[in-house]
Length: 361
Image 1: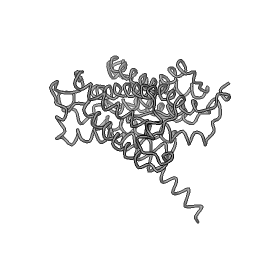
Image 2: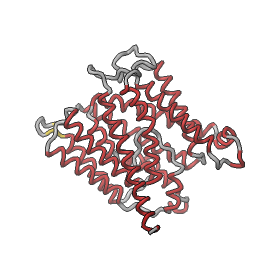
Image 3: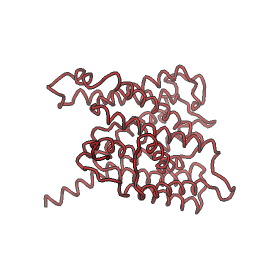
């Protein structure tokens, strides 16, 4: 009887982690839409929202690091952290935080232009752009099955975004360009994460402390120096607009989504994370068709099915080389995940970096 309970318990944990991630992702997609003012933009500063979220994540991470019982030789939290960090490592993590800062603000701006279903579907099918940058920058290899799945993803996106009644895309070309640019930033973040994993041995909580502190500082600086195109009013104060529950919910979701992704990678796996993202995109497409003026059509739903099948095919495709499952599981505990949605390829890229050099020849 005991042997039967363990698989059931493990499966329930996986399902709970996936459903939790889906709930947070769907909430983020809907919130970014309903929190907007009637005239466009947000009633609060999106830079202050991310700064507050990053500060919240920093406080959680510091508490976890201080409470960690596995520090070497019982050293203090500060000594353990400073012993792992160098100026070079901090600069690399700071550059990663800079890219995330830009991408987070871009996500708010795109949310004003696009429905949430289209945004998440585009994110689910961004593999081809990420793969191209990885192949050019770090020599990442992909199997024929993976490449075919990535091409199929892009075909699915084109089908979804083609409006057969008007004979062109559902949104202006500029908006698609912004989404592609955002995916490109995600790909560069993938390369930066791989470099950090390959060249530095830094504990997860320590790396996250530097990452979140940098993110908070960058967003506060940007609030005072850069005009925010995503806000409804140019003169918004740092804490203006947070009397609205929607603004508070946006901050809370940006705090929780990184935790949710970590839980999926810890208790489930990257394949289930991809499936969760697919299901989220489908649910948001349905919500967008009902509430957010996404015009449904047979072409749209066929395209959604093509994208979801392609993402699943990619996640199940054979890799060019086999990986040590124990090393992969160990790496999941070490790779740092930012609050923005990360794709399965980032984890795979980091796994590639961990393989011994002899195995790559």
